[in-house]
Every structure is written in structure tokens, then in C-alpha cells.
Amino acid sequence: MTQRHTLLKLLKAYSLITFGALIYALSFNWFFQPNHIAFGGLTGIAQILNRVWPVLPVGVMVIVMNVPLFVAGVRRMGVGLLLSSLYCMAISSIFVDIMAAVHTFSPIDPLLASLYGGLTLGFSLGLVLMANATSGGTELLARLLKYRLPNLSMGRLCLVIDLVVIVAYAAAFRSLNNALYGIVALYIATIVMDMVIYGSQKAVLAYIISDRSGDIASALLELNMGITLLNGTGGFSGGEKRVILCAIRRRQVAMVKELVNERDPAAFVIVCQAHEVLGEGFAAYNKNAM
Image 1 (spheres, rainbow, N blue to C red):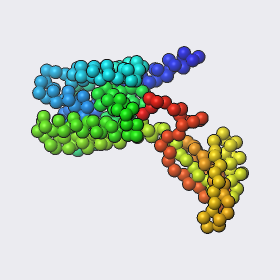
Image 2: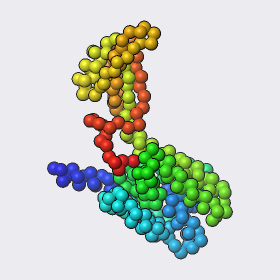
Image 3: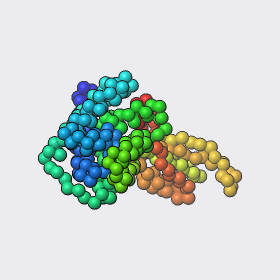
Image 4: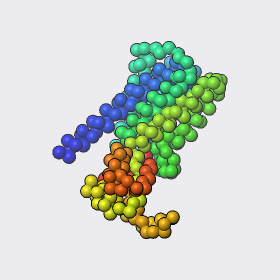
């Protein structure tokens, strides 16, 4: 049963990587390449080289330039991540070249290309990173830097790295406008990437202040929700209060508010976002987590 579960998990991860790679290739061929919008990472460098030497396919150059990064990353991240990343890099590069050979996309309004290019690029990279892989280049380098800079999100790290490439693109193509469009696309991509990666991990904290905290706490425990009772003092009344702290899923917010209202309509409820919750019922600590 465990072996079957592992196989299904692996199949799901690689299916996600394949779909992300397909969206990545579509984004590059549809929005970035025909509109000459600056593209970050090793793909951006390959795009510059392809402009100088058209005989060099973008996908093949990406694979060649990724080799040193994969060699450097294998010690830090293990063989599993490197294998999935190699697969992602290879399949996305193949998709890029196949799409370019099958269909040539016509240029569109550069602002629209930047907006939708950033949206699809961020979405694709977020899917790949969620599957514990990278497309190589910027994302792989960002994963390595994440160990040194754990407080920065993957999106922020990619943003800094790609900005350097975009500046080089502007110098090589002598096109400030295309570089500026590239920065717009890059900024949107990093926002979408972080939303895809971290959005599903966000939980909610509920602080419940009530004179009937005992009844509310018992009801929450019956629903198998973990709670912590905090001692508090009313600022106006000076009376002792029991504050219920409860970490819940976002889909459970409405249910908790209804439960509290049924037992004490005068209760004071504060609901706020929690970026990440570790512990029973939520995620476990992982030193390789993003």
C-alpha cells in the first residue's frame, strides 16, 4: 500500500511538472519571443544568444547552460530534486522548440504580452516548484540561495536574479522599452509564483474573546480543532478574560464564526492570516521547504 501511495504521489508530481512545463513553453513562444520582451534567467541569456546566432536553438542552449548549476546543486538538494528538475528542464526545452517549429505566434500588443506573459509564466513556475522541482536556471539558483536567505520568498529571489539578466538584455538588444516590458512581466510572474507556492499553505488564526469561552472551547474541541487558552484582561472592564487561540483552515472560517455566534453573539472574534502553520493537522517542518 505504501509503495502504491509513493508511486501515485510521484506520478502526480511529474504530471504537474509536465503541465507546468507546457504552460511555460506556451508563455515563452506566445508572449515573450515574438514580442522581443526581455526574459530573465538562462532562457533570457539563451534568447540573447539566439538573436546573435539564430542557428542556436533556445531550448538546447538552456540545457547546456544548466549543467553547471545542476552539478553544484546535487550536493545540497539531493538526487530526487535534481532528477525532477532535470526532467522539467528537458521537457520544457523540448516543448519550447517543438512549439516554435509547429507554429509561429504573431506579435501582439507588448503591454498585453507583458501582463499575460507574466501571469502564465508565474503560474507555470509555481506549479513546477510545488511539485518539488525547478525549471533550472533562475529557479534552481534561487532554491540554492534560499538556504542562505530563508526570509526571502522564492519570488523575491527570482526577481533579483532575473533583473540582472534583463539589464543585460537591454544592453544587447539596445531596447529600453522591451526591457521595461520585461520588468513588468517579471514582477507579475513573481507575484503569481508566490501566490501559487504559498497561497495553498496559508492558514488562518482566530482569536475569540468571550464570557462563554468554556462552551466555545468545548465545541471547537468536539470538531477536532486544536485550541490554546490564553489569559487576558479586559482593558475597559479590568475583568479576567479567557482568549481562545485557534489555527484553522480558510474553508473553516465561516463554520467557526457561526459556532461562536450561536453560543455568544456578543463574542469578539479576530480572524487574521497566518503565512504558515507547522504541527499536527498542518504541515511538518522540512528543511528543504520553500
